Every structure is written in structure tokens, then in C-alpha cells.
Image (cartoon, rainbow, N blue to C red; front, top):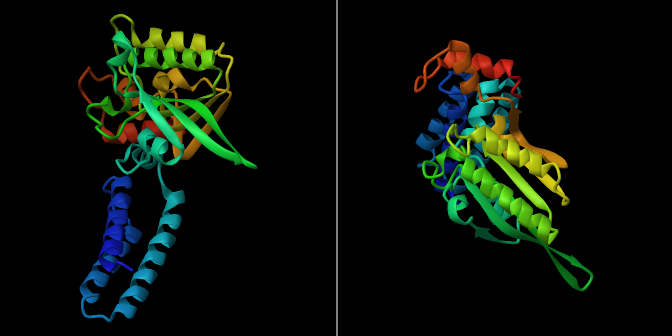
Length: 278
């Protein structure tokens, strides 16, 4: 066992818990920090067998506390979970769920929004002596792997138009569509083609698609989610949510703030609770 690597993994888990609780003090979290510090101070002089035993006990303690804390998560804690840098992203899913994939882009104005990721992926399965490669059109918001470059998953109208273009390609090729929703909401563009107008076009066209569509939600914020989420089957990742508006957007409306300002954190948290983000 690599003691140093395992200890660092526990430290990362502890930092993740602190991030999710948004700086709030919690006795169980403080206890984990104390136990981890005690282990680090004692492990230098301990024999290897004792180190392994102590580390195993500490890992069991982390597992127990994490399960205990899960029911105590507030609505805003769950929002922080889906937005955390360690949260799985669409690129991760393409790498580890599908057997092979090729990322594809749009043409002309459809190629200028990197927050909308399109890929032709394959699922390989064996039946007897035969190997079947099932092609799938994968469409979704990518909010990691260059978050600023990808605008945090907030897709502009051109990105949603690109998604619609490849939904029609999938229909032409008669292959299923898998969409992955990782967005706090659409990027507000009022000029042509308009954020709301493009979302409406997507919904209109998706309602008539003649191929199966499966949508998987992590963060489903407002119309930005709906632009690719009208599906035959909808799945939800652990701690994922699907809401008519983001907590920040609801807080902005409730407080009547001007553009560029941010609602108070307490109001945003209250809006998350009232939106029933669970």
C-alpha cells in the first residue's frame, strides 16, 4: 500500500467535504480533520503494519462519516456538489463509459460554442462469436476541462443550434441519441438568434425526432437544460437536480438587483430550498 498516496487521497476527500459545506463548521468534519492530523503526526515512527492498520481504520471512519453527512446536506450543498471541479464531466463519461468516441464539431456559426460538446460514440457488446458496435450520438454541455473556455456549461444559441443539427444527423442515420445535461442555465443572448428562441426551436424539433433519446442530468438549470433534454427516458445522476431556474437566478429576481450584481448568499440558499433542489 502506498501510504503517502492514500493519505493524500483522504486529505482531498476532507477538502471536498469542506467545499460542499461552504465553509460551515460541523463537528464531524472537524473530527475528521483532527484524526487525519493525528495520523500524519504518528505515522512517521510507526511500523509499516501498524501504519496500514491505522490508515484502514481512518478510511473506514471517512466512509462512515460521509454516509452520515449525506442526509444532512442542504439544497445549496447539493448545488455545490454538482458544480464542484471533482464532479464527473461529459469528457469523463466519454472516456470511461463508451468503448470509443470521436468528437465532432459544427459548421460555420455552429462551431463557435465549445460549451456544447458533440461526439459520435460506440458501445461494443458481444453476442456469441459476434461483436456488435452500436453507434450513438452523444450531445451535452461540457463545463470542465477548460471551464472558462467553455463558459461553465452555459451554452449560447449557436451551441444549441449545433446540438439540434446533430440530432437531425442522428435521425437521418437512425442511431439513438444520448444527451448529458451539465448546465446552470443558457447564456442570456437577446440578439439574433436569441437564447429563448433557439431553445424553443430545439424543443419543437426534438418533439418529432424518430429515434430514441435518453437524457442524463447532473445540473439541469432552466431552459439551458431543456434545450437538449426533451427525451423518451430521463435519468438523474447522484445528487443531480433539475430546476426551472438556478438558485442565483431566483435570488436575483427576488431581490430585484441590477445586472452585474449578485444576490445575498442567504437569499440564494433560501431560493435553493424553495426550489426543492433535493
